[in-house]
Length: 335
Image (tube, rainbow, N blue to C red):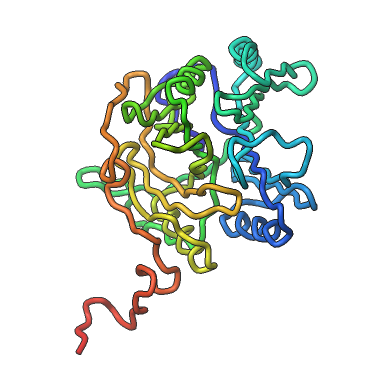
């Protein structure tokens, strides 16, 4: 679902169009990556000996390229990891602004005349591409809720999903060892501060109006640059659960979730990814406008998660792993 328009939208960056991983050096890993993204709910659009490509519902793309391929951008860290983020922009004027802002950055390449792209590296060495957005609007609506005093769902049951089909790439989270420099770099491109952990992390959205964050930069002691996770937006909390249970049934390992982030109000479920870092199902994040005032919060377990389940839920019992499968209604007495 495209984000609601609450004010006159400002021309700028539209969000993430694509991400590229370098992974799959071993044949068994190459096959495992293919299975993972299919099970995660992405549409497979290409599979060769050197590259795999998948799509979300709105056309955002996930590319996986063998680390040995010469065209693959350099890595920020050892092993399988994120190599490139492609940001979609609304119009040629925004692309022109990106070219001007990035002209002095490492790896700068002005490809507007040939492929309507501008490329550069961020302070971590991560390859960035800016292009006219290729994402398509989709008619997808999550289930309405019935908070007290505001009934929105009448004569209609909430859905139960057998699996998730991600709508779009929601955000990327990077480890950084140069937080101030990285924040200044992205803010120079038009990213806006939503909230922060002072000296530890900044949540940035790519436009003054939109979802809580498109990029989170996290600095922790003795950790260099690298990938933490990539989040994929699904319809609602029910699809977070449906997708997570489906992945669990198929044997994919939960890192944490389901749970809820207080700082963005979003529900989450994180899985270990064969491409490095984590992949997240994400739903119901805050929507911000220029009227929002960025908050400073102390980092800690309760700031990260209001609640969360370590190790996930078992897809068969629908309980925590190793729990006994229920044989009757929970209200039934047991001897």
